[in-house]
Image (cartoon, rainbow, N blue to C red; front, side, top):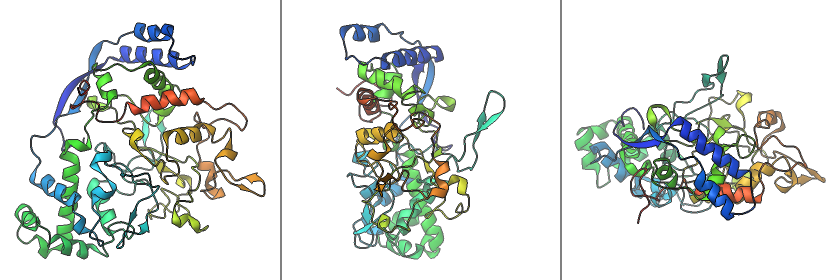
Length: 440
């Protein structure tokens, strides 16, 4: 996780040669779609078995939480910190739903009366610990020189803040969420909580004499809870078990894994990186980068009933500092795909509610745009949720987004079924411990 979370357990991972052999077998199998015949099952069984040589460093659960993290846990579940008295962090970030929303609403309800609708889908709070600070241009080594990967990092859909404690402050003061009118109101509520004495004990008897410091300590406590508590980074999926040699993919999962990595098919791994990171950190399934995908406008969001309202991601309206940087308008951060199959709303605006629809949109956005976008005077209005002047920012170069109208999509229905089978292996809860065998 972050630099102050350095306790890790060690698990085996595939050697580079073994990883490539497995990926090659997966890609080969993903090219065939005649059912799981005995011959194909035998082919899977005969695929090269990677040697276990490389380390993956799984986080070791802390024996006890720090005093700050224990306070943060109480803050996280405390609905009294909201204007309505009924909304806590856990209301939208349910621990029973991978710290994502507990329903399939496109956006969640909040406010002082719990009837105000937000404008963006609620992201999961799991696996955020390696998020880098936001930068407009992230450079990586290339064959000839460094390559610019574009904007990268930061928290929230638009990368507006650079730490978990800054992120924690946003819902406390958002009129559509916990709806405190100002920081002083949050601190006043803190003083009436059952754990106010603990705040004084941990941060000093005079902590409430300095409201700004009290609020900062409260958000730092929330950050400590999210950083230290193992439930925010459990790594207990089947994928982790398989990569540690404690589980085997089914033929469908293996084909889906191949499609996930195949640059001409799903090409998911381009942005949702599935290989270990520096120091053997487990795969995060995101590169923390930003893309403009041209997701259709969502009529479920009340703000979208105003034709003048538009969500430009990095360029606003929530983020203010990048409003004039037109080359980034329409870009939103790539989330981790861990636990993606548990979600009920996809993309920044919650436009789709099933994995099937989300994946069909990816591969049919350009081959059959009339299926996804409205028609005005008989003409399909493609990319209808982004002003025309920004539509050149939309990705049309990378598969599967590089097709033309009338062409076959990069994935067919059977491919999508296999890809979903693989994505379900990213759900936590397969094992009781990081990278371990299945729970019996």
